[in-house]
Image (cartoon, rainbow, N blue to C red):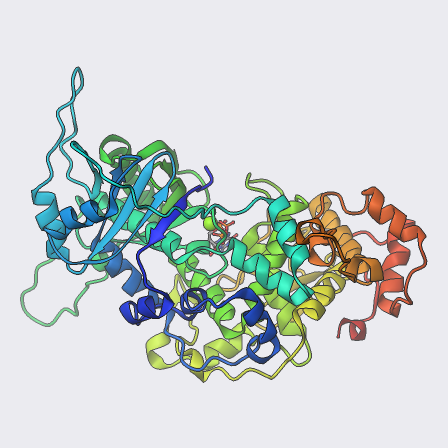
Length: 579
Ligand code: GTP
Ligand code: MG
């Protein structure tokens, strides 16, 4: 289920205040919150887009801080009409409120963050378990509460703000109003990226779930991973969670000589077996006791066993895994790459959106390219630029300090956590150029024989037959895109070629004048997002007109488009044409 919610009001007096309140918030959050008008931002694009990181907080400290805030928060279902002042006065009796906001899914909800955990205990002390007629309540005291409002409400003061991801048509309209493709890519990212409130809600859902799991494993942590934390999350994306039991099992102290005690434990046939039984029990608990969690499915025979459910109050589709530490590390890696240069996120958001619109990616599992694989494709492309926009994974490992050392199941997953150590190579390509060249790069990539390796930043011979081979960054023997079939990669290549061609056409690149801003015909990136670009009459019409002199590369691409030759894997251009 797609998350659909609207934040009514973030109780902040401007971005500065929040930055003071949350001194640890990540740079992106700061960038979002310190939002000036888009025009102002866009004007400074070339000055700020490829700035090297100065001091970016480490991934783990950002996550720890968000988790700690979630532990001091409650989620309250509210009546549709509510007096904000009275609501806050009532809750403030139990402690200082640090932050709050309202949002709407299937009803009105408030996320309220207190200054201390003791306030939560005080608040819960005043809550009652409802008595229900003809049924019985499970007496589980969670932090998902319902506000009952009797008596007069008084003036309702909520200032509701929609926070749904906008529709593709609305997006195309907004993009068409921008002045350049660079601005369009930034505008798309701004419109789609997770908001600060959405991320807080995601951490709160993890924290609520932890309360259930803690009944068995008090030291456990439920950590979000994937697009919730990797900086590439789009509003409405799923909530990937990982049950981390290292706090329980990782406390093996060195045995000295003499006496010692150890826990008696049940044994399972394998790690996988133990993971499956833990997830199975947690799934039962979530299903039976956890308010708001519905449609619980145990998918325990998957390569990575998981429990899937919907969290109704947030609208999130949740996937809970265990023993999946490498996925957290992959999320950190993506986060690091996304933090190094602002263009990375703009390009990834743009390519992800483009791919989704054209059915290259899908919400349904199958032979499609996943967002994760697509992101790795973008990162690899950025490593191939001259000068490179991004360092290789080996370079990130070589910069790591002793405390960054990380080995998971025998695989070296070490990456530098102090991003200020990373020196970028000074690439200054515009976003438009990067987008254009991304399409050209993959429009002529030898997918039939080459594998993509972001660890070394090189193409390698495929070690096994697969339509698309992307080496798993941290598990080099695995292919992250094993699921992709030849048809899907051919479609991807064909669309890359077509988009590269479109981005060379004067008419596509030209922003026409219109009587009102809402009537500007789609151009630039907006034109690339139109459904079935090649078939649309407009484009056919354009093709008949005289074209501007195209570069050699585009000529080659055009040739293959026209003749229908050059399926996936046929290398259309020599390597030097890449740069
Ligand atoms: P969305 O499509 O927005 O949900 O993107 P996502 O990055 O969250 O992808 P998804 O929910 O499919 O997977 C969650 C995370 O699991 C990814 O970000 C990766 O860290 C990891 N992951 C997904 N697929 C693979 C894979 O094939 N191999 C490995 N090693 N990790 C994967
Ligand atoms: Mg996900």
